[in-house]
Length: 191
Image (tube, rainbow, N blue to C red; front, side, top):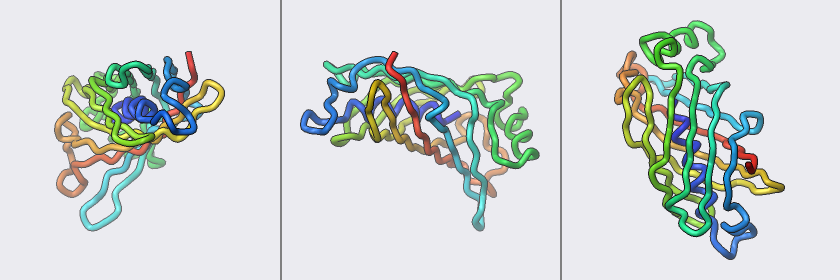
């Protein structure tokens, strides 16, 4: 769910490329559709005393638009389908889909819509946006690093942290951390 935010960060990364880089911003400008085949949205939650669990979302979609003339006007939109969550442990997966966490039956989508993209380095950017999960919307930030551009395909590595309590998903705290760490690879195909 927080992964959507990370996807938006990916757009920011592309916009962060300098003119002297191997790939210029002009080369990356355009619209892209996120391809699930070359992408992944992973997360981890720590546990008091060590351990915790890792998971991923199998279904998501999104788009990236990189504005060559004004990086700040670039946009990232990501939708995650929480019923696709997987941890490799069926009992945990069912619990995460339940009304105690994602409430996937009543809230079938988690959405991230970027509101700003700010260049932070030659190939990096900070993407700020609004994350909506379980009917609650809050501003969130993700960092994005451009990791490739070739033949109409762009790739970003996106990371960020989200407090799950903001979205009514704080069951298990403080034994399980309130902080969800996201680590995403987003691959976009030029539209």
